[in-house]
Length: 186
Image (cartoon, rainbow, N blue to C red; front, side):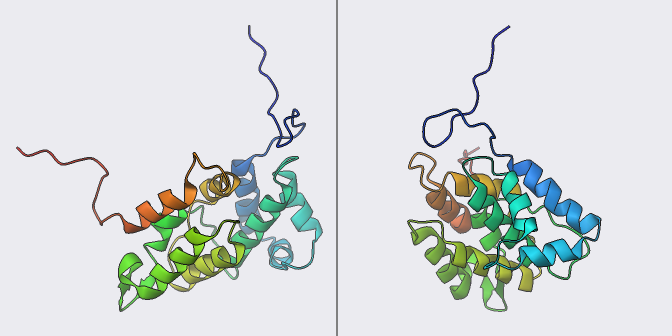
């Protein structure tokens, strides 16, 4: 039987408490199922660190506490006044394709295009633009990106090999109905 090595933190030392994006999403959706609206209201207070923020940060482990607190804020913003939780689906790029109005959706909507351009152009995690994207999805009555996947993508934001911003751009601009597989002539 082989022994698994502990997760390594950002400083190269073993991380005592690794992050768990799925557990954060489960906890946040449980707040809605259990009608814990006061806790969700606390999470919407971005400038004040409340007990709810600290609890969300626990899921981030030693290395991603702040990121998980901010993800809980985005979740609470999207779910304000909602009685049913949305786990979301797809990446932020795929979700941004659903933003729009009578002038078109996604790449055909100038506002959605500008918003995604601001998100993917940022070197640091673009929290303000992410909040705007989540708010726009909410106002368009569209599902958010997968909260778990969004959290994982933001953890990898600075990883050049992950190319998160590039992948989001590709998914935003992928034509409707495209499967990503090349067509063959028959």
